[in-house]
Length: 426
Ligand code: PA5
Image 1 (cartoon, protein in one colour):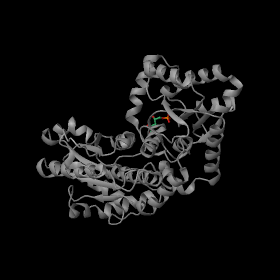
Image 2 (tube, rainbow, N blue to C red; image 1 turned 90 degrees about the vertical axis):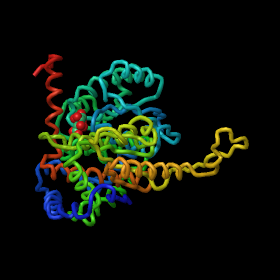
Image 3 (cartoon, rainbow, N blue to C red; image 1 turned 180 degrees about the horizontal axis):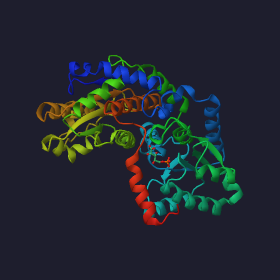
Image 4 (cartoon, rainbow, N blue to C red; image 1 turned 135 degrees about the vertical axis):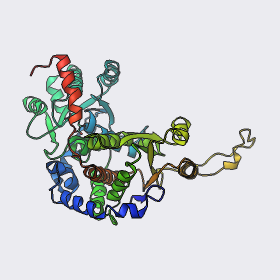
């Protein structure tokens, strides 16, 4: 279970002032009466997903494994890949040794060097493709799909390739759906009432995660359990809404939230959270600028600014209660490095001491508000729970800021400029 500690950030009396407002907004969310309510499908999706769909996802992943697929090329950008990467890396780490099918992400940039490197890597492997796009019209994945489709067709033939291309998109519209229908590719669905950055617990994330070997039922279980609490319109019981309020209070004087992890395998999670927060809240000249760090790595770079630089930020620090494995510092007879004072000490313990020491330095000396979130383990249940926690929290924060969490009008401006410059036909 997530444990939220706000004692170094805001007072209870400041939080309590939001009680009524949170109750009103929370009830509107639950009753689908809030602005953008037609995009709230994600909040009950873990309860609503049909067991047949879960079975289909698992069976398809199993089939690929049986057919000796070594690599799944996930083609998508923004919400169509960030959550998947976050989940897989959080649970399996940066160097997974238990990954059933290796996952590679493409279509999240327009870098020809990067795409070429990935083509060279994939062509040596037995690979399948999962293109993910809600709109079905996003440029970056569309470019990558053309290239990887051709690569696969050249490798195993057009007919065979159709059995190794999977499309995850809106069930009713978009070019990708047309392509899937015309080529008879297998499709997975992103429900019409769920937007990109809230879609990781749908087939968007579930299919690649199942291919990687994750237990997707457990992820959904974690989310369902979390939902029992995080849907309550009660600030005393609902930690997600409490965190949302703390952010809004801090944002009155501080513009930046630094999300800090003490586990490097949470790096992709930071990226997912940044998208969720920035795209949901950054509107009408409002919002918190989300940025992130990994400690202690970034204490040796950003640490100086945090401690003594301009006072622009507050920190939200996530730590894991129990690591996957704990190892001890080695003893050395000669002790030339003078490290024997740490001999046989657990590295996780040292990481915890680093957390406490850093918190003291940042809170007591630099006067930087610190929110602390502790979660149980880097496993499937915790991932489901954490996703629900932040999706709920960001939705509440956005409503408290009086913006619609579910659109992204600002993103459209660069897209339109780019289409114009490239000469895209109307
Ligand atoms: O959250 C969002 O809606 C966006 O970030 C989208 O996920 C992103 O732009 C990709 O869009 P699509 O899935 O339509 O290709």
